Amino acid sequence: MSHLIRVPCSYQGGKQRIAAQIADHLLDVGLGPSTQFYDLCCGSGAVSIELVNRGVDPSRIWMLDVSSWGSFWSAIGAGTFNMDVFERLLAELPSDKRGYKDHMSALSALPTGKDEVELYPLLQACSFGGKQIWRDGERWANACFRDYWEPTATSVRRSPANPMQPGPTELRRRIAAIVNGMRGVNCLNKDIMTILNTPLPSNAVVYVDPPYKSTTKYGFSFDLTTFISRFRAINQAPLFVSEGTPLNDNSLLLTFGGAKGGISGARKGKHQEWLSRF
Image 1 (cartoon, rainbow, N blue to C red):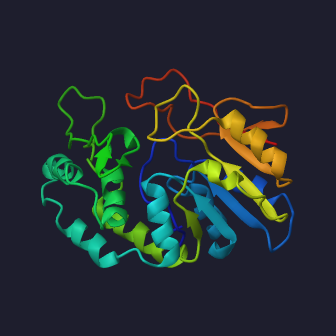
Image 2: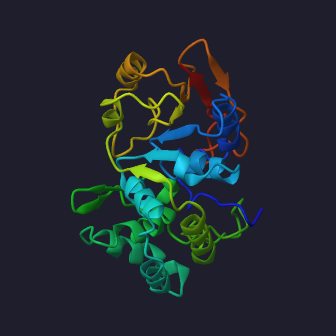
């Protein structure tokens, strides 16, 4: 599996565990080899990455995100992501993992600048619980980072908890694979409602991963019901929407593997992932 592209880092709400199932449904629409795939509220890009790993050329994918993920993917698609800057930021990490939290806190306190897209994957990889960090004007918001933790004699967990997921070496490998494999992807760093300004092509298949209702807040949100209604009024394209509950009678419960979830691991049951087609 080492040759496949992977999402840059852990991200709460990311779809890496179910991206293959979502891609199955998007590809099954059957519009042919010219299909244009739209990945709206793309975040860390799990669904777009899965499509590219399946052989879809990046030029046939349109990503959209109003957050710093949108800036990141725009730079990846245009070939302007600066690996030299990214590697410098990695090299400046403390040699002792116990210093990561203070180091990232200091970086996040600086005004957002020209190195936003190269810094963002590092900030997000160190985010506590994988919660979204976002750009709010010239500052970083929701920037809360992990401590390095080691088990005590009475700890149930017996291995250390690293402050960066993945670690620097693996993060560099993933970003390098993304730079090489995702170049040419189209990304709009805009509000999702702007996609409603004009009808999409007849060969479009659209997927939306909105912030889920009654879950951890993100830096940006929109009215999903209004979006769906306005989208259907001007587009004939198939529209797939992820949510934690079914949105219509044409909804499928996806198989969600892994742990029960929640930062504490104390959640009584796994949350549900539904894919609704409109």
